[in-house]
Image (tube, rainbow, N blue to C red; front, side, top):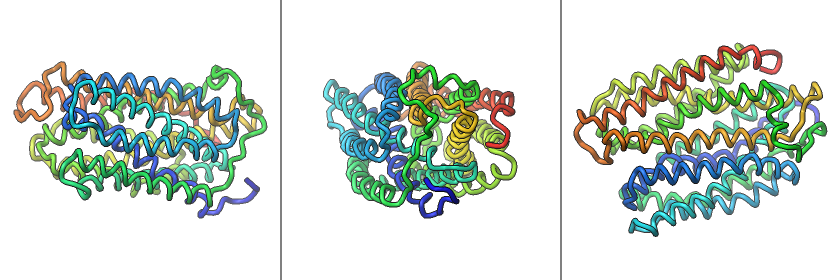
Length: 426
């Protein structure tokens, strides 16, 4: 883009597409396990295994998609190609056959695969586009914040809509899938019409081996922090509906809790951005991790009926989410910009965000593949009513204490390597 400050309207236009992409992510990563376990009748451990394998396969192709996207170079065209695949895939995924068995399993695998392909290609190019239009650290964090504010609005709407669309969960999910298609089309039009064109660096060499992406040690360290912190966030995302329904015994409050979580994330995001500009992105990210760890530990102490306390936990952990969404990709954009200035850029932004997406999705795959079989192994069964049972204790510990411990590791890594990310770009 041309020299000069980027107008706010262009940042907002770019951010608009974040709304439907996040709208899709909520049912994809939160509702699908319970939908296919409850409504389709697939065993919980089998659902976890399918999610692990399909998400892992999806994650593996992301770096290749990023590299391929850099070769083609037209972010808008690639996103426009990906969005219909995403719309069709999600609508199909959320409308499974009533009978379980082989047909339900095949439906899950095939619809997940189509959804993941569209989602991956769209998000890689969308995030790379955002990294390529910011010319200063302030613009990059502004672009990222605009995207994540729309994203949080998307998940709030996706969390609130099911209870408004239908009382039956399966019917509500089916309607949600069809609502998603026009929402996706309108947001895409807004972004394509109003966002500035991406301008990949001339120093980048698309098509280099993916090993070139890992040549920058700062990127490897940032990726390690992202990976550990991401697993800590993905485990509760996988188990939250089970925790609300069986530990808290408040299934009718599920939508409210999710709305509180994501609304607080959106409300806190401008504050995190302001703190990042004053104290640096790294220190602000560290503070958000402390808040998240405290929230996880508190959640483990809750009993059945503790709805108000869990609402406060949702508010606190949601606020921490705002920083987790905005600051890590802004730090990556800073690293890429710093590398281009110093003549160290080796690959296009698509390749970097392809690897970035791989780590994010691997976290989700690992969370589903570990958390669901783990709680099943210790005796948890969907719909269990005995709050003193070993299965529910295992569910609470896996939902709350395991993520807290992993988040501590992420915090320690970020603190140890803080000087590698701090400086004039952070």
